[in-house]
Image (cartoon, one colour):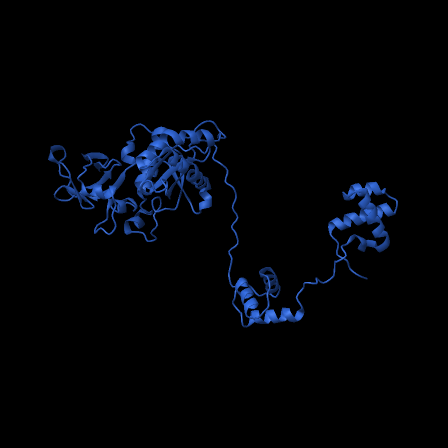
Length: 419
């Protein structure tokens, strides 16, 4: 007795036709059950009456394809795959079979033949990781995504720039963005300062694993091992002092919202800057803040799930300029000076000419270039920025190959140990 394999759909058709032939239902009812026209139901009914269950099956079932490779050719190809062309990938082997052996085969046919013979491909392909779409945060200010986009924003009309921007996860609102010379810690501190001044303190920020945000070195210093944690970077320290949670993304897809923002801006903003005739970074920033961002937010902002904002107001007594600055622990020398990257700061005497020699202090350089020195949270020295300061010029125009670490190097590094 011949065994026939039938699909569920064919079983359903055969059951309906059999009931119709036995008089249990009409042909019209069987056609309705099978989802076919009445004319097609009559055709199937006639085939089942003549051939039985085989009348429902395709005529080519069980037949060998006329395009199937002969057994001799299959054996020849498998012999070459195991011997002469062992270790070749599917595409490379197909090229060799066509060019050298005179056996033209498509890559799909060769791949099927080799896999059926349990000959694996030497190229190991990692299976795609499962990724699920992350739901938006419910409130505006709950999470901001930060990133930078180096691009030819002026299309050759001016210097190269990097657009540093923040986008709200709940609403797609861009609370602030600005053009910088390079993507560095100072640019993100300026971005955070403007966002906090205009909106408030967000609950969290989502960034990539750039060395601006996280320490990249594997080895810990002795002080870090004793403390049980690595010293944070300048931006991470500022976020920690502000109570902002730092979330690191380990793939571009994880922060796809700001990636899509830059894709949109590289289309729309690029054209608008060309139309506005911007030729410098100052002109580009003025156009971005005065014209583009208000229009963009009005066009692309989405309503949040909850209307109440999650931004926090700046606590009373918090010095925002001090927090959003570059902090370096240092030790006061016997001559009452503090040296930071070849820069010397003279510490004045304290009350009753108290000496601060050997004292552990924190030196802050603010974003405007001025200096502050704190001892146990008490201000010892405040010095304005000087245009003649050689290190300030280094900060403005970083150069490569200096004999000492410039501020650009310091800004991208974690805080020095000690203090």
